[in-house]
Image 1 (cartoon, helix red, strand yellow):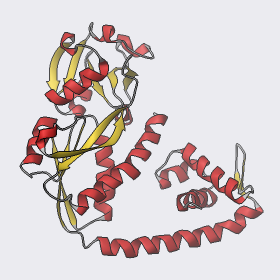
Image 2 (cartoon, rainbow, N blue to C red):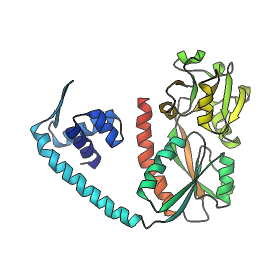
Image 3 (cartoon, rainbow, N blue to C red):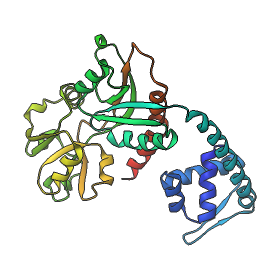
Image 4 (cartoon, helix red, strand yellow):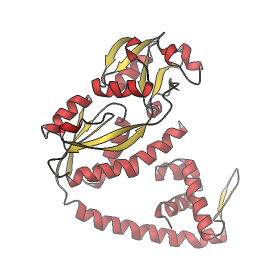
Length: 301
């Protein structure tokens, strides 16, 4: 019996609201429904009676509620005890962050900072080539980028964050009325190109299977938020992950024909030194918590 399923049930039972439970559990409403359905399937009974106007507990639901709350309380006590030990982890964690995946790292960083208060995070945003140089000089402990490191660099790489890229534009842009945009259509409009660096640009180009040199690139910007802000006052187009839509609801994000598949970023660290425990813990949070949460959120945007 999953504790997170019990948490979803308790919040719905106490608030009589799936939307409030969704916000408190930091998952989507469909996920809350799935959690409760899984509990009902496991227990072989209905726990809630849900109508368009109300949510009530069945007899089984009333019986489960205090027991579920007790299990959650004991689980939290256990976490607190373990976290007290983990808080002995101190020092500094230096993280490199490449383009397109910043929302995932931001989500993981917030969780990490809360869970490990004695570790100071030092993020470095930049191109993959710059971050790889910092890794080789041991100025970073771990880096997250779209590229794969070269074999002769002594860098270990593991797949980490799946993501997708969309064409972003203002809602009044001529292409905003379409469900998807083609590469040929992109050639006829002005482009703000993310400053991803040569390696990630090559990877981007490989996935699109197109010669991106034909794009009408008017400017190159390293900060995706700055690029997206410009779109609100222009007819230009840029590229970013769909997750940015939650911060820019007045923009349109359209899939690119031929680039609908998920792409994969990588986590990198040097092979000649042991991976810091704090770096491993951060990577675990990215994979096990940030990616599932933001993937579900992206499906709702």
